[in-house]
Length: 367
Image (cartoon, rainbow, N blue to C red; front, side, top):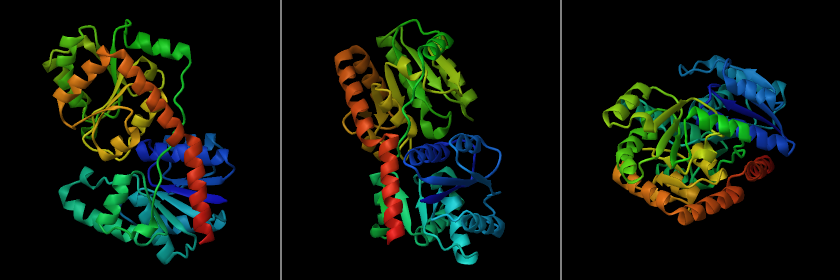
């Protein structure tokens, strides 16, 4: 079947990474995919590398008719069987195309989590109204976690029979020994314990919680190092906090890098987020068989099941205690590692995701 994937931005974030992974998984089982997104970002290059035709459309949040007209034209010219919209902005343009520009193919809205609180308080009401309009105008709404599925139903966004929960799948992170050794040298790790976090330096990720837990961890495990892989708007503020806490060279700021070479170095991998849908980083930790400490956000606990240490969000004391316990009990940590790896293979691999989405597409086209 031929599927047009639509997403507004082409700069990489969680939604764009999910699209890239989905394109790869569907290509493996023989689907013909097309991608429609804003020009200029790395998602376009990643899609082309997978053999996916790319169509550039100037999406923006002014919701002008031009991009909706372009989507309808692309669907007709490429004879797409259905449209898979990723995120609220892309889905709204697809709904406009359906209502005003003769888009007749089924539309799936892949919600990728609730993010209304990321924006100004005056926009939350209008964004929720827009979300309800979109959910009631498409053929299926895809939730990425059971909690998001419940929120969609309880918030009266869409009737239960039109909502489908499908987990993300990701490729297994891999890095050869030379890349891992290069990462070890770059972070000046000397064989001592390493506590790692991969994530944007953004309020969502709660990196300050890990930093506030770090002094207690250092007291218990003096040779521990903390490696933070990522960049973002809070970098200067977080570096200042680390200095204020006297963490010095025990914190390594690795910057925006491919995370795969760093994962084998993490004795404990941390998710300290304040809010999440189902973070792809957590799935990468599981795929790499890491010992994981994560906050008790519904999407996170759904991902790990009983394969990780789960702590309350925004609780540096609980985070420190959990990390110290796992660094001191290698047998328990190894049990978590094996269980996380097994759960990833069974639930979150690219193959499982491709099978599930292909089945959903078939159901939708037959209905």
